[in-house]
Amino acid sequence: MTIEGPVTWFAASESAERGFCPGCGASMFWRGHGEGMVSFALDCLDGDTGLRLEKHICTADKGDDHEIADGLPQS
Image 1 (cartoon, one colour):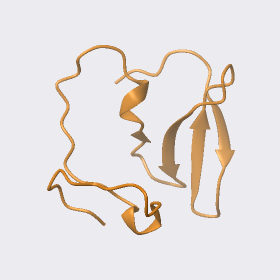
Image 2 (cartoon, rainbow, N blue to C red):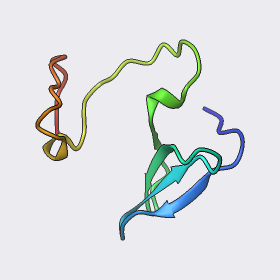
Image 3 (tube, rainbow, N blue to C red):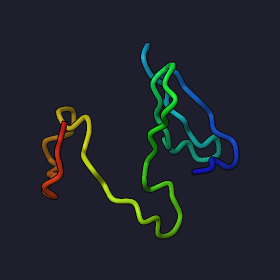
Image 4 (cartoon, rainbow, N blue to C red):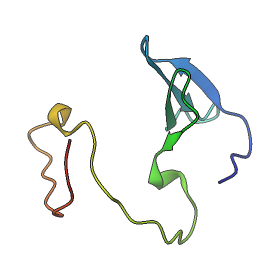
């Protein structure tokens, strides 16, 4: 995956930072400090990707009005 264009990084906590679009403010990326992996919001990708979800993370913090019923693991 190639990231094109500017990204504004914000230290969201002591352990991670988030990448935002400087034009519209959309939260697009997340990475732990010192980690080589970047997680991204799938909605930021244009067109068909062939990607499939494997699991849902941070589900303990979701609002009670959001139901995740696709059968994928939740953590």
